Length: 417
Image (cartoon, rainbow, N blue to C red; front, side, top):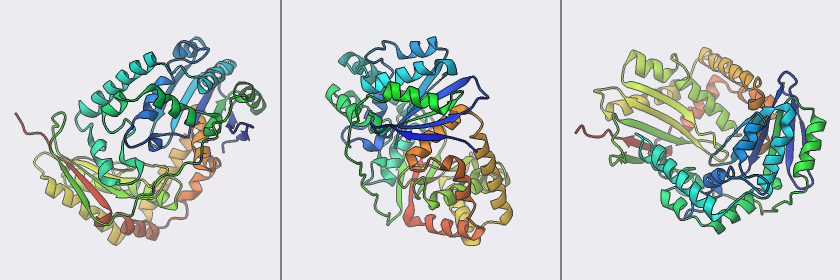
């Protein structure tokens, strides 16, 4: 059980604090409620670009990373489709340094033409390195617009294409920052060797006078229910790929829906561990795949259930794809055993227990669940998995594993020169 306190400052900033006296360190996590889904279709990649810019200094800080290191800490960040998350880990005695740095770049990040040009170059190179110059790197650049036609999940966090970042203007970046990087759009979560009263005192001191943005509530277009199978045969790759890959996406519920928790159990039954169905049946017993996986995107809005695998050498795409379909149809038709369900429940218990050990993990999960609308899920999420029976899992498989709900990307290998 993770003990925590929760406060909302007058300017709208939310503070969640967990005291962990077993460590001499503290993790300061700042989550901004902005991700790729908050961008415009003609200017994607802004949220990720701004994340890079936030390490370029602020009104009173020339070198963010140097200040963190001088305090004996480390920092990092990541952006996804739903939110942007920053964290600093450092000795608890230096917590005020972390709060000073985070508050200064929330209030006045150094957004200049010079810094923008530098980070645009960095992000474009990242785009090329990870998405264009790596085998299968552009898979999600093709799969997302295949599965989504309306919702902004149809583009990747990195953006649709490098030109969207290259053409971003300083005014666009500053406007985006003002709208989203504000206390009323942020969650500060702290875990480590600091008392709740001290954390509140310091957060009020460093963040309390930052004005809110008062940005209007966000509304995202709903993705219409998919009515027909979609398919893309990908053959023209930026870089040669050594083997075929099959990726089948099914639409499922959002992160806190009951549908999500049932699908999470289902994905583990299919692909969590060597005894899981797909691995046991299609890799070990019948070596049709060299590797295969099943997972959820875990998006806040309705996301995707992914089945992804590489056929073994000599196995055609047609044979491999049929084997996947046969497996999920069998599960949907016959269901699962009580033993399978209990095994997955045990694994979920272990995973959730491990998330309570690290003060860094606790800080992030407190921020995440506060963002999702119920911070107490940090303690009660296990109960979300408990009600599902073998019959429930069978029913959810029958509902989602429908041809009309599928988007299939077949990534064909490159011809041997």
